[in-house]
Amino acid sequence: MADHSNCGCTRRQSLRSILGASLVFPAILSDLLAADNSASSEANPLAPKQPQFPARAKRVIFLHMSGGVSHVDTFDPKPKLFADNGKTIPGGKYLTQPKWKFQHYGKSGTEVSDLLPQIGECVDDMCVIRTLKNDHNDHFEATLGIHTGSVTFTRPSIGSWVSYGLGTFNQNLPSFLVLAPQLPYAGSQVWGSDFLPAIHQGTRIVPGPEPIPNLKPRVPSPEIQEMELGLIDFFNREHVREREPDAALAARIKSFETAFHMQKEAPEAFDLSKESDATLKLYGLERGSTSGFGWQCLVARRLAERGVRFIELIDSGSNTNWDAHGDMQTCVPLAKNIDQPISGLLKDLKSRGLLQDTLVVWTTEFGRTPFSALPDAKGREHHSKAYSSWLAGGGVKGGITYGQTDDYGIEVASNQMHIHDFHATILYLLGMDHTKLTFRHAGRDYRLTDVAGQVIKDIVA
Image (cartoon, rainbow, N blue to C red; front, side, top):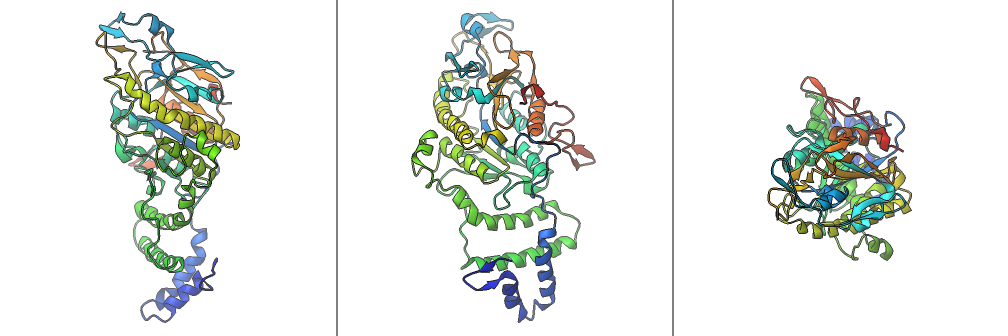
């Protein structure tokens, strides 16, 4: 039992003091103190769990680019698409060449377009997947698909599944944090826990001067607040014991405890004042800034260091994103927003020895068509049949590409990776068998990968 130096008493002594002389509470005093003794032995849904087999990665930083990044303009070079620009293909569509040239990077020589040159510098640590396939061509459904594995029904997010399967290292911070300046397509369903216990849902952080509102205590002292929470906890547990199991209530009880500890640890995690000028420069971040993707990436590294299990970063929302129907040039500021910060994140993790057990995932809901309905079209449409994503660190082979699309980037030519395969492989790198990470709901066992998915071991180091 920790001592409170400013009052010279323990929580137990405080409880005796506040309740001992009361005519209302003496009957519950012994039960409350007994609960205080047994609390540490009760099952904690966020306690770190052993993986099912040796894990390559301990944590995930999941980078989601909202709107559908064009694969043929970023990570899937197509010389023939340049050569055949303007030619028609079956269906009366016109081939449209990429707007940026591609360069070879690193010792591996992996090609990345001039749109993302600083990310290109990190290809030797990356596995570029060129044949990802989603199941829907609309933003809402495809965004659900890449996050939950389902494009038709709301299901738990991958971050919630990871929290449920592995718990988290730091009990003073949520296990699943989402840094999102705007709501993405599908809104909070992107980080929802659905039928999993609510304690595993993501906590959204909005960049700004106060990333997590209401963290500052309103009570005069921590001791009084702890006593208040102790009383609330006691009555909540009494309520639970008298009723059928209620996952939502259990999660709410646990959230009080987490929120209390967050008041001390979260402000420090989001305080960048002690970061060096060199580190801030690496992320392209001005000192004192509390927003921007550079801020999100640097905070992600700090959260990873502090034991958060799953950290998601969303670059934009359901508007003003990568959905370039009218003009691909609208992607230039979006690329500039993420290029240096992501490069900085990978380099920073690597220099600190964190990349080897941190899995960095970069993805989007789908790609863009390599063709257009009009010969002079400046934009591209949605394309879920084949598009690009990449993984880095966390047991992934670096400096490789996986899968090939056809000469124009329209169809998968070899080694398709469905989103179920993508999720199965991420779970495998974390030491979990996707077929055994299940939850009983509505009379059947559910999993992230539904009834499909295979681990792509070709990309595992």
